[in-house]
Image (cartoon, rainbow, N blue to C red; front, side, top):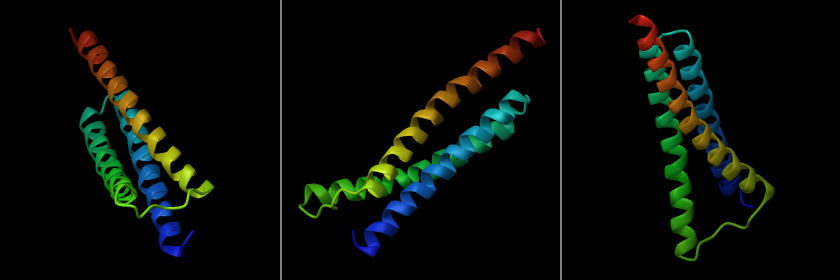
Amino acid sequence: MTPDQETFCLELITHAGLGRSEAYAALRAAKAGDFDAAAAHLAEAERALGQAHAAQTKLLAGEAQGVGMTPSLLLVHAQDQLMTAIAERTLIAELIELYRRLEASHAC
């Protein structure tokens, strides 16, 4: 693996980790009833995960053009981090909606 490829993997891990952290911050805010903060954190999670996804798409496009990356444990870890973060963000968005509905039903 080249230094550029290692850097790519570490950037993917970093963006995925930031996205995951922001998604959980959104969940904590929703749990506390602060839905504006939850929305802001979720938007930041989307931004970070979007950056990671864009990098992944570049990697896939390169692969399709015959310029692939040798699979490594670091690459597998980076892909796993991104996939997991995206799945968690999706589930957290649903949980936030449940918190919103619960609060609305208790306001009546």
